[in-house]
Image (cartoon, rainbow, N blue to C red; front, top):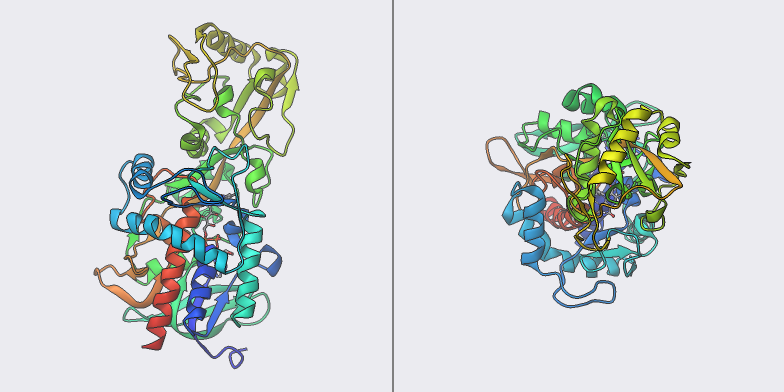
Length: 466
Ligand SMILES: Cc1cc2nc3c(=O)[nH]c(=O)nc-3n(C[C@H](O)[C@H](O)[C@H](O)COP(=O)(O)OP(=O)(O)OC[C@H]3O[C@@H](n4cnc5c(N)ncnc54)[C@H](O)[C@@H]3O)c2cc1C
């Protein structure tokens, strides 16, 4: 084995959006590139294959995005969701580079389409991949094949040979056989966060992590992240910070993807397993709030909650792949959901009594709200009184973690003494925490991945040529 893969210019750990962005860019600059991916070929593309869009700045309407979305508005949106926990230099650079990535992705064969309905109202801010993330990744892999990039599947990076902050090679493990080394002149770490590593999540979250559902790939176990931190790379972010949404409690442990997310939260009420509401379901527009509900459910007893809606709102949200649990009365629904019936009846009755009539409009912050209720429901509050009634069990669905390696705007990882590593770059989830200290802006994960992936590819090719 060792003789087959003795040495490459650029070694890339992972094969998602960030990795392929780096691989193709490095190959465009003439580097000999190897991409190492733990998953089998049929599961290639990591979390990136589950995506649908990326957030892209534009000064005027394009064929896939409406109106304009300029740097300052984009940055203001980011500051609002992160509460200022973002590196402004990296964030503004990411925003400014995003339109160039749009053009570059098209040059690699990626195709885009205008936003679909039911997609969190993102038609202005986000560019949608035609065929979703899987088609995006397939285009990248086809381009990689044409460029002669070597992609090794079922090949996990388990060790890094770094001396004095300089990368020399990786140790990999394939399904069969002994671990072996691949030498390289530069390394791009694009192997995701640690969201699929339940032991690590348990360290951060304690026992609640037992009930987390991983929305994406089972292979993002944080191995490369941990190896870098062990080698003295500076860490940034908090291990409990992550993107986590409410998913259907019946979703599989891994890879359920987008179809398990539940968007009906703002259209009804959400109760915990005591039958009690615990948060304002209508606090803000759903694209700005959907990513807090995973954490919210994680904080409830047994990490479970239940969304309760009535027939008035059916058709106003994208349903989960699992059918809603249906009943003709609230009492019957509570019993079917396994909830304390009297408590749910009292919660719904109290909520219905507090609803102030208004003009319902799901697309804006309307005036349908509650009065005298704790917690209040600030918008889209309609009495839940039109049978049949529907319920969905909700679980925390973790998308990706924010604990990251620190990088500079050249995508170089920063060592604990503040120096930038000469030939070690990072892109994607593994460094997204530099920009996302907390909160989330839909489509930013892919933007960070492709912007830093391309920079990392360019810098890796340059370092390899030195
Ligand atoms: C259901 C779902 C929907 C999403 N929708 C969107 C969206 O529409 N827009 C958006 O911007 N973001 C979205 N995201 C977030 C987005 O997927 C991530 O931000 C993005 O894909 C990260 O890209 P990446 O290249 O860093 O990681 P990934 O695409 O996850 O790639 C990392 C790769 O590294 C591999 N790997 C891990 N460890 C090793 C190792 N030790 N050795 C070798 N290989 C390894 C993994 O197998 C994986 O293939 C979504 C996520 C999910 C789960």
